[in-house]
Amino acid sequence: MTMQKKKLIIGNWKMNPKTLALARAGFSAIKKGVVKYKNTTVGIAAPYVYLPELAKSASSALFISAQTISSEKEGAHTGEVSVDMLMSMKVRWSIVGHSERRALGETNEFINKKIKSALRTKMTPVLCVGELERDAGMWYLGFVKTQLEECLAGIPKNAIKNVVIAYEPVWAISSTENHRDAQPADFQEMSIYIRKVLSDMYGSPVTVSVLYGGSVDEKNAGAFLSEGGADGLLVGRSSLTPKKFLSIISIANAIN
Ligand code: PGA
Figure 1: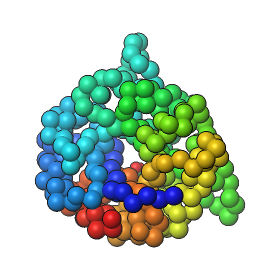
Figure 2: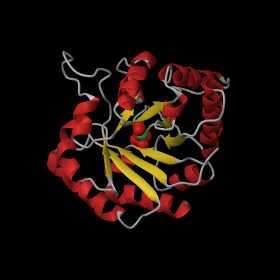
Figure 3: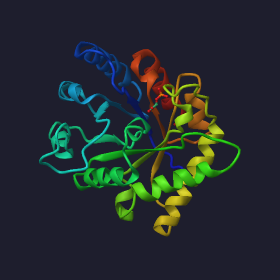
Figure 4: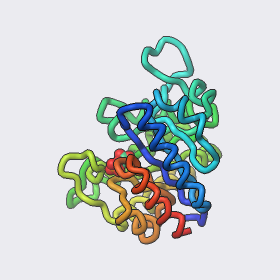
C-alpha cells in the first residue's frame, strides 16, 4: 500500500565529483535550492572522503548518506568503514547492495550482514534490488524475490520499516551499456510484487518505502512518482547537476 508521505529523493553521486571543492559547491547549491521544497525528504549519497566535510553543512532539509558500509563492527578489515564511524560523523543513511557493488562481488548474504549491521545502530539502509536484464519471460520477478528474501533474511518485522527499498533495474541504469528506459508501469508492477514478497515473508503487509532508480531525469521523474506510484527516487547522473536535481525535487514536491 502506498502511503501519502513526503517523497524521498536521494542523489547517488557514485565516484563523483572529482574534487572536494566541486563536492562542496554542488552540495551547497542543492542545499540552498532545497529549502523551499517542504514536501520532500532529500539526501545525497556522497563518496566517503567527502562526507565529513559535507556533514558540516547537512541540515534537516538535506541529509548525507554513505554509498556502502562494512558488514563488520570493527577490527581488521582494511579499507572498510563501519556503521559506528559513520554514525559518529552524523551519517545516518547508507545505500547497500547497489548493482555496481554487486558487480564487484557483493552477494545477497554479504548485503544481509550489512543491513543487519546498519539496523543495529539505527542507520537507515537503502537496499537496492533489480534484475540485470528483462526478456519475454517472468524470471526477473523471481530474481528480485531471491534478492529480497536473502538480503532481508532474519530481519524482524518491526525493523523492516526502517529499511528503504530501491528498485533499480540494471538494464535502465544510465551507466549500463545500451541501457533502455524503464516505464512507470515496470516500476508499478515490481513495487506491487516487492510488497507481496515482503508480505509473504512476514505473514502480513509491511510498511516500507519503495523508490525507483535508473536514468531518472526531469522528464521522467513525475511519471515514476505519479503513474508509477514510487515513494521516491534514487537519482544517479542527474543528481550531479544541481539544477537538474532541483528540478526533480520540485516535481516530486508538487506531486504530494
Ligand atoms: P542513474 O543511476 O540515475 O545514473 O541511472 C542510478 C543509480 O545507479 O543509482
